Every structure is written in C-alpha cells, then in structure tokens.
Image (cartoon, rainbow, N blue to C red; front, side, top):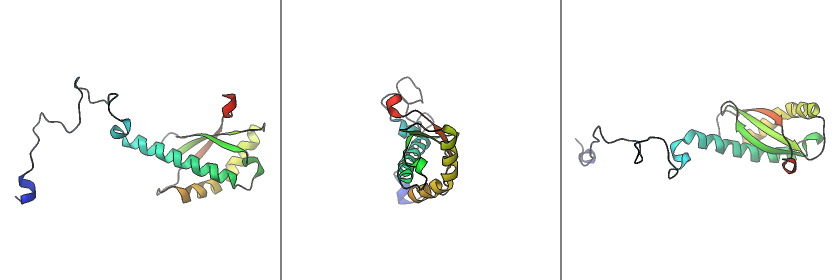
Length: 137
C-alpha cells in the first residue's frame, strides 16, 4: 500500500456518496443549486445562451434584408442539445411563410457563424419558429 492511500478512510455502506437532506430524499431541496445536481442541464442552457448571442450578431451581418430586423426571443434544446429551437420575432409586419423561407435559406450561413462562436464538436441543427415581439407579449 502506498503512502498516499494509507491515510484514506474507506466508506461504509451507510455512508452515501450523494448528499441527503433531513428527510432522506436524494432530490434537491431549495438550499441546493440545481446546476450542481444536473450538470447536463447547465451545459444545455449555456449552449442556448451562446447560440442566442451568436445568432443576434449573425442577423445583424446577414445579407438578406428580411433578416436584418430579426430578434432572437428564445433558444431551447429541442428535443435534445443536438437540435435547437430558435424563436425569432420581427418589429414590423411580414409574411410568416416568407420569413421562414428566408431563415431556412440562411440556416447554413447561421450555422457557420455559430460554429465559430461555440466550442463544440458538432454544431446543433437549428429549427426556427416565429414568436410575438416582446412589447406584444
């Protein structure tokens, strides 16, 4: 046995690796941070925030005049982190079908912009939906 392992205390069966509250529940209480318990959700939220920032900048530099006034309302994993649902809105009235067509045409350009801004092996697929502008909600 090495000197490094001699001082370690072995865990007994009654000692748990998971913290428990006074009720014996393994589920988090209000005193625990959710990010500490569910790190995959924290990473998904972090990815969504990065994509939202990147898309906001990409819309401002896009060549399509229909997309210059687009605002990102929300980005969420849909159904997982490999695909993201992006809810966008415009300040002016526009035909929803033409806007969705413009977004689908610009999707490869937008994914390239996102790929440069996030640090992931695979760039998520973007699914666009339309939402109401913030002042109408």
